[in-house]
Length: 260
Image 1: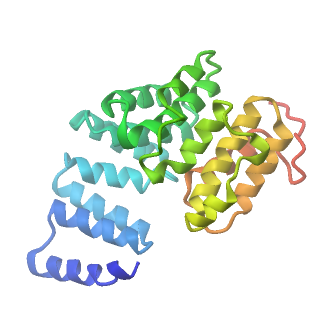
Image 2: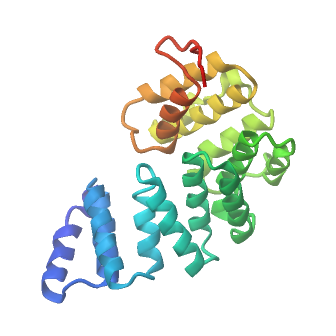
Image 3: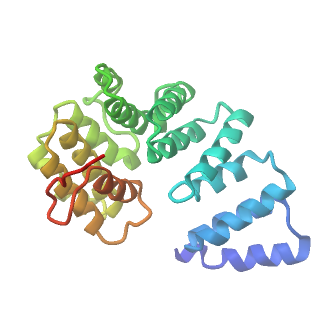
C-alpha cells in the first residue's frame, strides 16, 4: 500500500486545479478503492458517468465495486458495458460471476461461454473461465460439464500465478488431485499464505463434495471459509454464506428439515 500513499493527494490537487473529467474520476475512484474506501470509489465512478454515461471502463469499475452487494446494479452496468465493448472478455467474466451470485445459472453460463470466445480460449481468461463453466454446468445439472475441463492441459506449466487456486480446483475436478490432500500448504506458504488462494480453493472443494452428495463434508468446508479471517470481500466468502443459507446448514452443520 505504501507506493499508493501519495496518489490521493496528487489526484485531489489535480481535481482542484482542473476540475472533474471522466478519466480523472476513473483514476480517483481506483485510488480510493486501493485505500479501502469502496463506497467513495463507487461515487467517483458515478460522478464520472454523469459526465460520460458511455465510458466503458467507468461502467466496468463501478460494476466491479458493486457486484458483491448491489448485484443488479452491477449486472446493469456490465450489460451496457458489454454492448459498448463486446470484445472485452473481462466484462463477460464478471457479469457471469454476478449472475451466479443471483442464482441465474443460465445467464451465467451464457456469459462465461461468451467470455471463453472473446478471450480466445487462452491467456489470463482460460483457467478461471473453465472453472466457472464447469461449476455453472453442474449447477444446471448438465451431463457434459466435463467437456470444458478438457480445455486445460494439466501437463502444461501454469503461466499466470494468479490462476493458481482455480488451476488446483480444475485438477480436482479432473480427478488429478486427492480431495483429502487437496491443499498444498507448503506452496500456500511460499505464495505468502494467501487468504484468497485458500478460500478460493476451499470453495471449489466444497462444491465438488456437494455435487457428489457429500453435504456434511461440504458444509464443514463452507464454515471454514466463513471463519477464515480477512476475506469478507472474496467471492468464495460471499458464496459460502449464501450456500450455508440455501442448503440449510445450521450451526452444527446438520441438514435442517426444510418445508420449502
